[in-house]
Image (cartoon, rainbow, N blue to C red):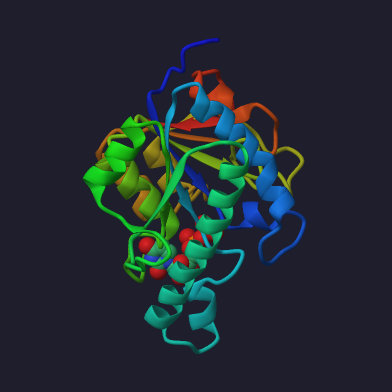
Length: 238
Ligand code: UDP
C-alpha cells in the first residue's frame, strides 16, 4: 500500500453530504458510503480531523433573511452541526473506526469539549476527531472552522469534499463549456469568487500557505487518492 503523501489532513464535509438525495436532514445510507472510505483511509495511518457543516438542517444567514436574529440563527446552525457530527460518528464506528466528537460549544453529556492539545493527542493515537459546532462563534461558517482547525491542529492540507469534481471557471451545472482548474491560486479564487469555500477560510489558508484540495466526495476512492497526493480535483495554493 502506498504511503499517504499527507500525514494529517482536515476533511471538510458540508451538511448536504449527509442528506443524500434529500434536500434536508440526515440520510444514514448516504453517510455510510463515505464513512467506509474514511475508515479505510484512517486505517492506513492517515491522521484525520473532520469538520462537519450543518446546512442540511439550519443556516443562520438564511434564517436571518427571513427575520430571525442572525446570531440566534447561527447558534442554531452550530447545534445542527452537532447532530450531523453524531451521525457521522455513528457511521464511522460501524466501520470499526475509533472516533471522538469534540464540540466548540460545551455539551459535556454529548461530546468532549474541543481542546486543541487533546484533539492532537487523539489524532496521534489514530482516532478520527470530528469537530462540531463550528468555531463556536456566530457570523462564521464551518468553512472558516475547517481552516481554523486545520491550522491549529497542524494539518498538511484541507480536503474539501463536494458534489462536483473540482473548481470550474463557471458553474458546470449551468454552462456546458465550463473549464475545470487543476490548480488555482488563492487570489484568483477570491477575486473570481469561485465559490470553493468562503472568503474567510480562503484568506486564512492563503496567509498560512495551507493547500485546499477540492474533489468529488461521491467518486469512490477519491479520499484515498487525495491522501496519496494523486492529481484529483483542484488544488488551491500559491
Ligand atoms: N455557524 C456559525 N459559526 C460557525 C460555524 C457555523 O454560526 O463557526 C452556523 C451558521 O449559521 C451556518 C450554520 O452554522 O450557516 C451551518 O454551517 P455551514 O453553513 O457552514 O454548513 P455547511 O454549508 O457546510 O453545510
